[in-house]
Length: 147
Image (tube, rainbow, N blue to C red):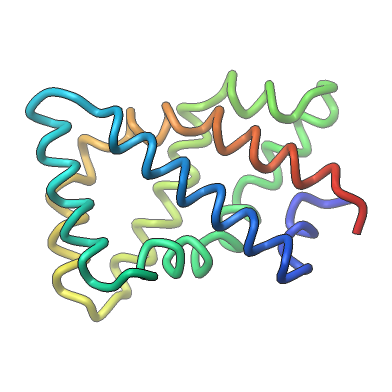
């Protein structure tokens, strides 16, 4: 089964989106220091766009993220453990994910989202890389579900 197959079932996709939303919430909440304060403030602004904005944004970019991560996932399957493979290559996976979000934000008409993202873009790579093991676990859990 291809990794992107998990998104064909809408109920399954909704669970993945929900888990990814909680992952991001936990990552942001755990961030400390001045950078953490800035990230939390910006995340709060983006969440303030609407209660469903974050899950909606995840749902919109998830197919592109999963498709973009598919080659790495396949390499991990060949190595015997795609979850561990993504986790061990989290910087490369973060680059893939940020490439998708960069493209999406560049094409949004929402000036608030665009401005907020551009302020934090350079500093979030480490945060995205840090979230990759959690994302890999989520994808691994759902990729093993029989469709």
